[in-house]
Amino acid sequence: MAKFIPVGIFDLVIFGGAGDLTLRKLMPALYHRDLDGQLPAGCRIISVGRRPVSHDEFLDLVGGSLRAKLPESEYSEEFWQSFSERLHYIKADALDPANWDDLSDVLERHEDRIRVFYLATAPKLFGAIATGLKQNNLINEEVRIVLEKPVGNDYASACEINDRVGECFAEDSIYRIDHYLGKETVQNLLALRFANSLFEPIWNRSNIDHVQITVAEDLGVGGRVEFYDQIGTLRDMVQNHMMQLLCLTAMEPPTNRDHDAVRNEKIKVLHALKPIGAGEVKRHTVRAQYQAGAIDGTVVDGYLDELGGKESNTETFVALKLHIDNWRWANVPFFLRSGKRLKQKYSEIVIQFKEVPFSIFPELCDTRNANRLSIRLQPDEGVKLGLMLKDPGPGSFSLRPVSLDLSFADASGVRYPDAYERLLIEVIRGNPALFMHRDEVEFAWRWIDGIIAGWEESAQPVEDYVAGTWGPTASSLLLDRDDRSWFPD
Ligand code: BG6
Image (cartoon, rainbow, N blue to C red; front, side, top):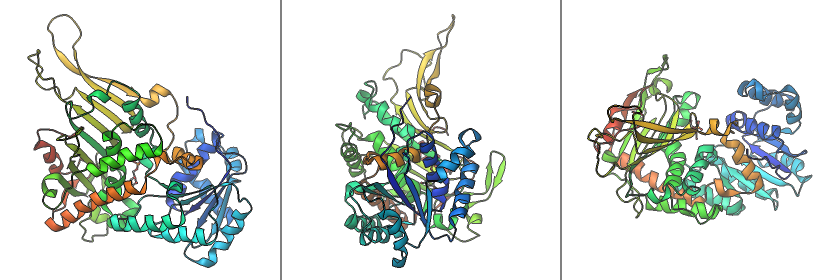
């Protein structure tokens, strides 16, 4: 079992400190790390927000959301009392210069502590907050600034944010979060590839037929519909989470685990992505929107109904066929799909190896269920290796596909920490390995911008799919055309 090593004493300042991300993700993550004894006495969590709430009201808000979110076995009233002593609330509008004094007063008493500024706000505020921190002399020797995704909504806006924040903070103190990098299975992908000699020699175009990456959600856009309508799935999920999964799957072995070594390999993958422009979008991409349907027997609205009947071309589903132009991956298609209101919450990376070159078993006509490595992110994190074996028993010699199934939770017997728990601890420790360098963000945007421009130029239609399915027919056809199919289908 991994050991919990306490971090150094810190002040964590969260902008957007009474917002949805703070209540839903950051506070539970900090509570857990504190429960495991990782936060030293005296560390402070200072929420800065525009909500006009008193200190007690703020504690009620956080306490209420922790009680609602954590299972009974993980919440105790006694521990909450001690955790709540770390919490402070400052009502302030980061854009109003008059509002910085309270924060300065609170911080100046502890000049030499690790100081983390977590920007859980809209990205358009990142530049202004960074400037405010600098102008108010709040940047000390031990500072880190955390930028929540998305960093911008295209290449130009990402560069502008990176430039503005970069004027105030050194690149190695900027932590751009993609919470998928904190997921246990994503970490395990590195272990699987580079701590075993089994896979790396066959991890290439000679042995791999294709790769699939699915990140499916059963939830719809819900309360975020107005925001989501400006964004869509390509920007919300593909530019960041799916690009990171792709990079970790496809990158060359780094020379060590240092952040620069890993990030450099990821950047090379992004460099090698073949552009998909107006001429290619039709054959290589599918975009679609969910209609009313049923998930697990519950009837759900369509996207346009949630949008109040407005017209919209925003996609809630994307499927892509892409290529990485380098020696390892030449001509190996990578199929990516992500969507809301699909059949179930399910994320998996599937490596489909090639079939045997010659079969001595006449009945071995379809081995596609075998020769497959599945790396499951959620639910039930784990790795599954599909193989063909002989059906046991005397008599005829028949084959059947079987799976070597390794569920990580069963294998390790520990609670799976939320991605934010690991990421927050890594920020405090000052280890940027699990965060994105500005180049990663910008290269990913440049490639995504090409697809968006291609959709606009070619007026590619937005398909429909019924909520509770695996997406539109066009998504299946994307693979059918290559005589392949999605898992699951
Ligand atoms: C976020 C997206 O980054 O990731 C959301 O903005 C999405 O739209 C979420 O629902 C999915 O994260 P997870 O960890 O639940 O797969």
